[in-house]
Amino acid sequence: MELPSKLLENAVNEMSQLPGIGKRTALRLVLHLLKQPVEQTEELTTALENMRKDIQFCKKCHTISDAEVCIICSNPARDKSIICVVEDVRDVMAIENTNMFKGVYHVLGGKISPIEGVGPSQLKITSLVEKVKEGTISEIIFALSSTMEGDTTNFYIYKQIKEYQIKTSTIARGIAVGDELEYADEVTLGRSLLNRIPFETSIKQ
Amino acid sequence: MELPSKLLENAVNEMSQLPGIGKRTALRLVLHLLKQPVEQTEELTTALENMRKDIQFCKKCHTISDAEVCIICSNPARDKSIICVVEDVRDVMAIENTNMFKGVYHVLGGKISPIEGVGPSQLKITSLVEKVKEGTISEIIFALSSTMEGDTTNFYIYKQIKEYQIKTSTIARGIAVGDELEYADEVTLGRSLLNRIPFETSIKQ
Image (cartoon, rainbow over all chains, first blue to last red; front, side):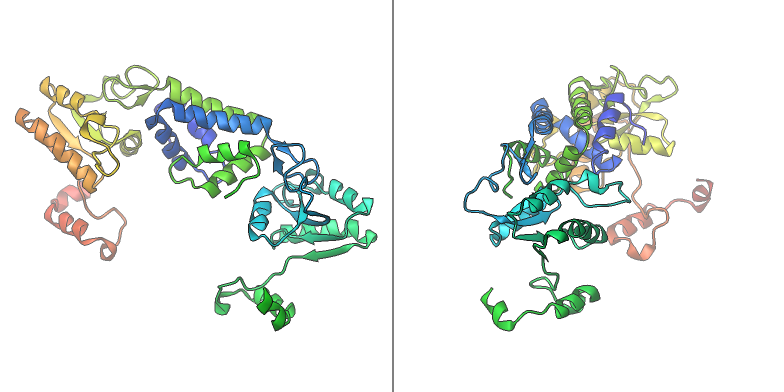
């Protein structure tokens, strides 16, 4: 794609570095900015720069935060002995939306993925093991996505903490609420049969 | 969607002002920037700011250009008496890629669209009519998209230039090369029959 202007080309190239944004989409976005008042571009770039430079991560759970300790970790009503291990802040937001979890989180910042060049040392695994070593944790809940990378990461962490003999669990895999059985894949359906729960329990939920 | 940080929220809000980018996609893009080195965000914001502030539009055809007059308008080999009227720079690029057009362009900057609040005064129509008035133009080719807005814009311009009795044409509508007849809509198929061309002409193309 040959562009008539170097300035336009630079903007399109930078924009298309973002995931899921190809050159054509980047051009559409950049041309949109050109049609808008110059202030809109300034507000966008200022917001991105401020965020990238000033954002902090909670020193306890590593989630994105505006303070040293995030609002979840600093909330006295949350049970600090139950830790839910998640990949990133979007998973924290998703679980918080359910209003079902009253423990705290530990944000790994990704999953072990040799293909994408992500090894255990790039994730916040050591600090999780440290927390377990301190002896105040009663349960670790693994809530990574159910992929090969997620399972590998779960197992890597499990191997390091099993000697401390605390309770470990993983979120249930099964048929999503509202889904038709016939469209479920066989692994999910199989697991949901193996891990069936008492009917009395289910009607109370 | 409740975000755990004001800085993150501002960045997501600004990003989701772009067309086709919802809050969820904006969050994904912004979290990607957070995982990359700070330089990537700086390069993106600098490229966008420079483009928005310093970009020029060709004073002859209004396309995006790094100079006062674009490379097409300043090329002595191009026929300045044939003007192809298009919506934006992407159409110029698309037509240039065909290598079939040796005239020059006139970029309107949009189409007349009451729904989106775009009236004739926001488009570069006056300067096109001025060019025609000067008497050096032999043909105007309308190459706007074949929508109600495109047809309205064509007709609006046509009414203003018809008194000067220059040749006006519109690009052919028909079955795309490689397309199956049975999947064509009836308007396109009907027009392609009405505007059929001699077979001898078609085999030479």
